[in-house]
Image 1 (cartoon, rainbow, N blue to C red):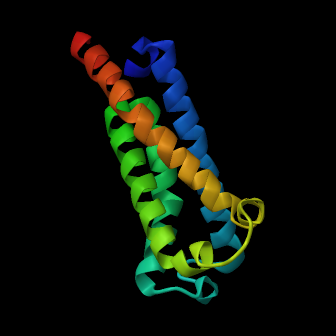
Image 2 (cartoon, helix red, strand yellow; image 1 turned 135 degrees about the horizontal axis):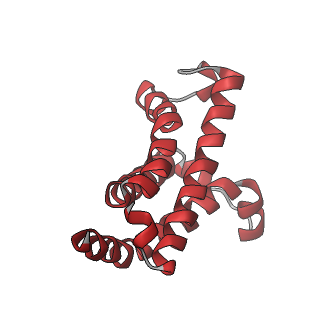
Length: 141
């Protein structure tokens, strides 16, 4: 298995990303169990409902692929978090950024968005070096 041949640094990145994707999974599963899929509780467009509900399946798929097929897992994780951040910040722009509240209050109120942004930065910074490491090790196999 390719994962076992990777450097400790690359393994750590993949593990951190997998844990974060599983945290996202838990959020989407909890929502689905409480409200159902395509719930009117979203108070959002059909596109947004389909997008968020799809993450119930895409997030754990990415987490698994980070170990089984790291190249594909890295790409899928990058795409998911990028589109999720863009989507959420577009849909909730006014609520997130046009209020006059302190930074501390913003973080307290929107900690999940803050965590998502931090994770997105991590994924983007780690993407190239981790992908390079995965490609080198996969060529040696």
